[in-house]
Image (cartoon, rainbow, N blue to C red; front, side, top):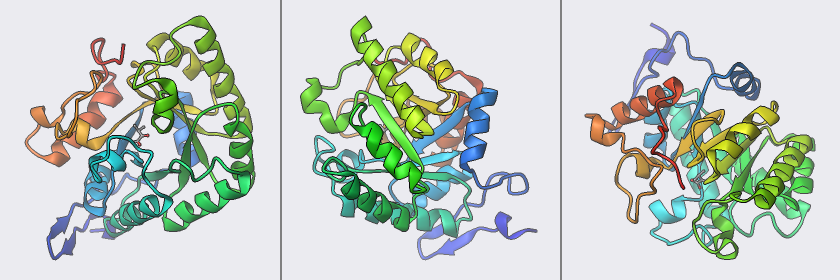
Length: 293
Ligand code: KIV
């Protein structure tokens, strides 16, 4: 038996072993790029602590996002704006530790929080370094246009970057609420220009949140070097992401229309994560009704 197949005992129970230990290799950036180019769907789920990260990894989730959504689901805030870099580093470190202990293979993405990259490129790299030191493999930042130079600066210095376009929760006040973005031609065109520029700047992944399916699908084809990860953006993206609490049906607020409750159809949390992976891979999630518009 290889080390990968062993469980790891903790005072509170056992961290799960990887689901198919013999075949699982650490997820790398080239592997994610290759999946995008081959059309194999990429799975992403948020996690904020060691145990849930290990369970998601064992269920086959390929990319784990330590999202600043932790402001809502862990800290009880109404928005992500109050989340600090220290909060993000703490949760990223916990997730990275959980993945290490469980000998996980997931690619770990961490959000640069509000106020940690807007001031200057120097501020952005200091913040990104803090998250990379905490164990992230890639950082995510929101917005297009002005962020292009920041992305280029980080990527040139060896930090993989995931962009985030469409509904960008850190600027929800400027956007006028949680609503679909890129609906009219001018907005769609601007979003497209931002996405293409971010790819040119070196972003290798982009979350598209609450964007019409037709736009998200065409961007997926227009961005061969930048895998699109959709949330409320239809089924045509290279991958999907959900906030873990939403898909387990334990969210404090209103559940977005594009979410499917995978816990309702499973008898364990690991089963719910595995059902999510299977549904994304097979293309059955999201279906025609699970969208943001
Ligand atoms: O913070 C987060 O969880 C996110 C996802 C909604 C993509 O950015």
